[in-house]
Image (cartoon, rainbow, N blue to C red; front, top):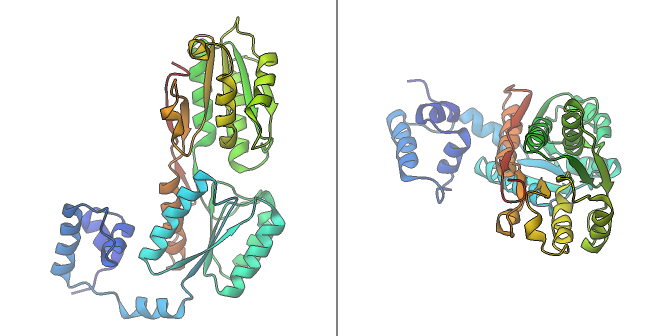
Length: 334
């Protein structure tokens, strides 16, 4: 009888390859008993054992994967990293982590350092300039999977959210809800990857609906008092105004600024609307709860690492994998 591969076991059991790898490596604490039973039944029926070729290939490998993120303390990055580490460890790999601050010099330094350490491939949130490094990695046969942000001359695989489509639809829906004035608050990073799509979705939705919108810029870490002073000037409470916060790191400061208005709760949602990105989950606990866009960061991290390890095994797969962001409509825009 022909020996099965992990992929074939996963297909027969109706689960992912990662789930099978978790089971084989004893990581079953979050796995249902039914899933464990199905996998074990197939193993028992087929007498599955890792092939000698696969073991030899893994023995020759360093087992190291380079992961370069903008900032792994960022909630989105932290969750995506957890997904990558879970998949990597389940298949006998270890993650080398670097924080680039989304700057090309840091990217270059980390790539060079990780190559010297024996990195087999890379998952990276890339700057637009990363293409120069990617060409060299391609020559060295080091596969790359981009996570959300990719270079201007992008080639290869990318795992991302449907950021443009999501924001376009959200703003369009808010127009239908009757909002008249629109204010986007951004950190000024609109030329970089996800931020560009988040900004473009907002602007195009307004343009297609023949609406005007304003934009204000703040750096992450801005104090709510500064935002409050801006809002007092920019908001006309005689019109329904939607505030869209395009940068995840600014949403808390904006909400705290709005709380400084007298009887601020009564402003939502008839006079004022608020929506933004929340990778942490705090928006569901505010009063009122804030409408939030939530990226499935952990799942994206899992898929990015699966795609990279698949390339190391010689598989091609899809070029671009797009996850749908989740929109939680709550009290600030109803």
